[in-house]
Length: 88
Image (cartoon, rainbow, N blue to C red):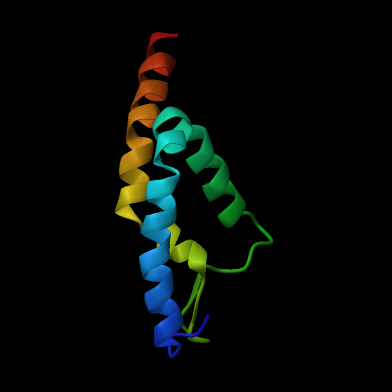
């Protein structure tokens, strides 16, 4: 979506937190593996860029990756995974 498409960007900014909030029970239980797989999918070698300033384009994935709510809901399982990996 292009930067000039203000309506689409506003809708995405509203819908991403709603989608993250709806999926919050799953993220609280299994957030670390889900987030890791999602980030691997977005940043794979042949993937298109999530933010292209030269062409004036932004991907919906950019709003998810930069969402503090998404990171906050994945934090408990990520800290648990780190704790278990240290003890093992």
